[in-house]
Image (cartoon, rainbow, N blue to C red):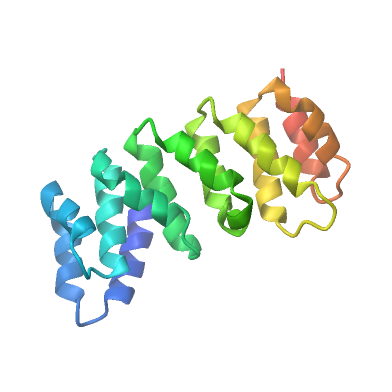
Amino acid sequence: MDEELRTLTLRIRREAGEADRAEAEELLATGDRDRLAAVLTAAGRPLWARELAAYRLGSAGDRRAFEALVLLLNHRDPPRCASAAAALARLGDPRTARAAAALATNELRVSYALFAVRLLIALRAPESAPALMTVLRRRLAPGDPHRAVAVACVEGLGALADPRARPLLTEAAARPYLAAPAEAALSRLP
């Protein structure tokens, strides 16, 4: 069991409680992808069950989980975002980078953008660097409170080593809280 699934399992067992423990264990144990996909579309299913089914399907490369995982990537609860990002990274769906870029650059949801930014970095898709630059440019506005998102963008642009990011990273290096990561990112550019 990978670390992300172990963490998800512990959380799901707590959320399911005693009343739904048997169902949670069945969803954890089943290898039946159709059973997992049915959980995603059945009416009245609890969020923990949908999340577990989507994570298991996504991690197995089953694209029926895509929409549910994108919704979870944009959830207000960081652990749900983290599990969705991990499953989307494994899913291999060509729509993933575009969806992550749309979520990351949605200024109305910037408080929840951290995991979409990290997913873009992991995907290393053509959409990744332009989206990270868009998000970082907005985070450089005076008084912007989303420092963790800004740091993730700077680190990601360094990891992607896209030379188009040089002017923006140079500007970021002038911010005290971004100086060290921006200098490190600039040193990685060709």
